[in-house]
Length: 325
Image (tube, rainbow, N blue to C red; front, side):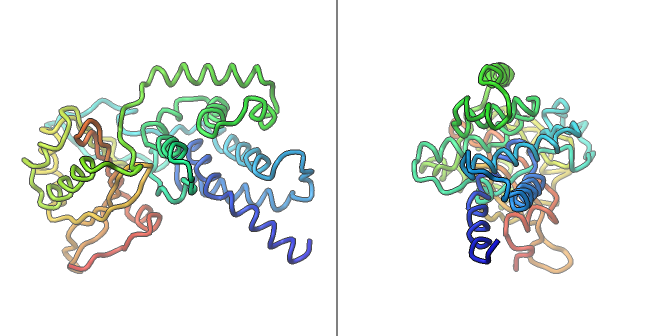
């Protein structure tokens, strides 16, 4: 292959990276596994490009490779989850911080890694809805091939015939898989969490009040912002709390080290989020602590999910590893 052809192929593959990462993330539920899957897809495509006969588009061919990569990765049987998918909520009096392995947890991902630029506002809104944590968690309940069918048909709007060709099966089989996938998801009704598309004035004001309350560690102000059944999770710990009383009670006791934190906004899973920094007793200023995913519903905070592995998340989101005082 000539140098110019190599450059052209690299560019042709690279322009699909973001949407392929979004597809693999929906399939796998892991930001890092999704990026690994896309890299594997690119390598396989590069190595076998001489066999690409052009009967389908380059994009379709890449999706076929990415699907096979994801199905291979899912053969291990791992199904990622949120804390509330694994255990019941814990009353504050019984709260204990018990970690589980990284491969248990559904992971957050920056919007920029999975949401390509879309001119149509309606399509952009659908794309953001399809990377919300709740939707990704629901997808993990599906068998791998049903998961692929539902994403391709419902999220990416592929025709049944296109999906059948990609999977090497029949249209009838695709339609049957889609019907079963829909039935499974219907048992887990979606919430009405707002996506950042962008947020309206009232939602933005709610976020501003949340930042003020959290940074001021004002539990009364925070309580006023929370739904009565609001949820707080803290992977890698399997503990999760429901309701303002238990949430603020935890923050005032076991979580009191977060007092004095600072929040920087990040775009995560189609919803508002923050990089949380807590006071650094050794260096001064603030040290990274968690990526927060904020869920807003009906004018209040319905949930905030704090992902605590700072060595992984802060570099992924491209935010500073230390803040000056």
